Amino acid sequence: MSAIATSKYYPLQEFLRQSGEDEIALSFGKIEEILGVSLPATARAQRAWWSNRSSGAVQANAWMLAGYHAEEVDVANERVTFRRPGLVYEVRRIDGEPVWDASLVKALRHHLAMTQAEFSQQLGVRQSTISEWETGVYEPRGASTKILSVVAEQAQFPYTA
Picture 1 (spheres, rainbow, N blue to C red):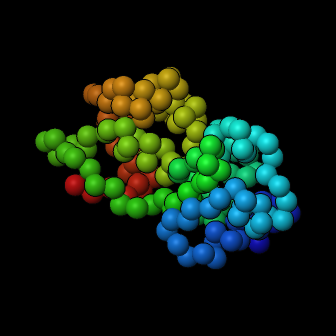
Picture 2 (cartoon, rainbow, N blue to C red):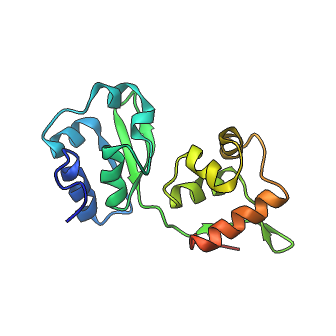
C-alpha cells in the first residue's frame, strides 16, 4: 500500500498506476471524477499547484508515486498531461562529453524528483542558475557539466550518445 492511501488524491494515483500508458492527458473535470471531489481553486488558477515537488505536496506525491510527472499544464483549458519519466534521452556530445542543454538539465532534475531549489542545493549553485539553464538563458559550462554528468551517472539517468 502507498504512503498516501488515505489521501484524497489516492484514487488518481491508482488510476495512473493502472493505466499502463506512458502519457495520459486528463481534463480537470476527469480528474475530479476520478477523485470524487473537486480540485482546489489553486489547481485551476496556479500552474505551480501541478509542479512535481518531492516533498510538501500530497497531490504531486500521488502522480509521482504512480510513476508520472505532470508535464504539460494548461490552466486556461483545464488540462494536464502526465508522462512517465525515464525515457532514454538522446544527448549531443562534444569530444565524448555530454552537452547539457535546457531540456537535458530539466529532464535530469525531474528524474531526481527535485525542485529547482533542491537541485541547486545538490549541485552547489544558485536556484536562479538552475532556472537559467532550464530556460536556455545559458548552458552549464566547465565544472558544472562535470558535476551534472557525475550526478546523472549516480542517479542512473538514462541518456545515450
